[in-house]
Length: 419
Image 1 (cartoon, rainbow, N blue to C red):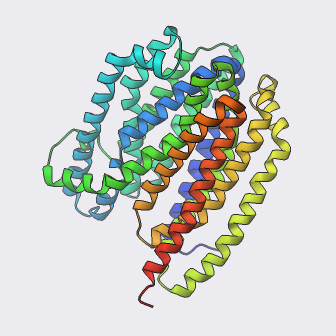
Image 2 (cartoon, rainbow, N blue to C red):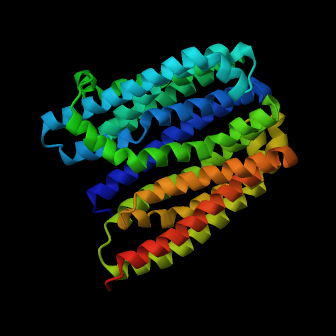
C-alpha cells in the first residue's frame, strides 16, 4: 500500500526520524543514569528539567509563529528572511534576559528553588547562560520544517542525539563522569546539530533585525501557543523539581529514571498525534468526521490497554536499562505507565482541535494539567512519597483527558450548529 499524499509522507518520515533520534537520546540517558547512580542522577535530572523549561521559555510560541509565516511566504525569500531575523531578535532578547537572571540569581535558585548544594551553583548558572544554544537549535529546526527541509531537520536531530550517545559510549567504557560534564554535553550538543541547517538557511538569516509590523504579527500568534508550550513543559517536568524539594536527590533519581523509561512509551502518543493531526485537519465532510470518531474511540482504548500492559515488565525494564540500583522505582513506574496510557488515549481527540481551529485548547489544557499536577503533588508527595508523584501525574493526565472530551464535544456542536 502506497501513501499518495506527499504531505502525509513527510509527516510520517518526520515522526519516524525524530522517534529514532529520541530513542538514541534515551539510550544515552540510560547509560548516564547507570554510571551516575540514583543520587547523582537525581541531581542531573533536576538540572535537565530546568534546561527543558528554560528552552520552552525561550520558545514562547515564537517558533510556531515564525514557522507559520515562513511557510506562507516561502516563495518570497525576502519576506522569509525578515520573519526569521525578527524571530531571532525576539529570541535573543529572551536568551539575554535568562542569562542575566542566571548570573544574578543563580546562587539563590540553586539553594532555594532547586534545593541543591552550593557545589551545583556553576551548572545552574551555565544552564541559564548557555540555554541560548538549545533555544537556537530548536529555532533552526522549526525554520527548516517551515521551508520544507524536513530531511535536514531530521539529520540535525540525529546529530545532537548521536553526540550524546558517543559521549555515553565513552562514559560507559571509562565508567566515570560528572554532573557538570553532562550538563555541558546537553548544552552544547544541540549547537552542533543546528549547524546542519546552514547550507539551507545561511547564518545571515539569523542576524537580528527589527520590523515592528512583522513582530506584531508574530506576537499575535504567540498569545496562545506560548502559554500552551510553557504550560505543557511545566506539566512534564514540575514533579521532578517538587520531588527534589520535598524528598531528596536519591528519590529524585529513582523517580526520574522511571519518568525517562515511561517517556519512551509516550513516543507512541507523540507519533500518533503527529499523523492524526494532519489527517483530521484535512477533513471537510461531516460523515468522514463521524467515521473518524468511531475509530478514535477504538484507537484510544487499544493504546490505553497496550501501554498499561507494560507494567508487567517494569522490573526487567529497569534492571536491563538504568540498572538494579533503581529497582525501587518499579512501583512508581507502573503508575507512570498508566499515566502515559491516559496521555496516549487522549491523542486521537486532541487531533480534533486542528479541524475545529481552536488554538485556545492547547493553552487551556496545558494550564489545567499544570495546576492539577502542582496541587496534587503538594498534597500527595509528603504523604505517599514517590508514589504520590506518580498518582499526581495520573490525576493531571486524567483531568486533561476529561477536559479534552468536554471541549471537543462543545467545539463539535459549535462547528455544526448550522446543520
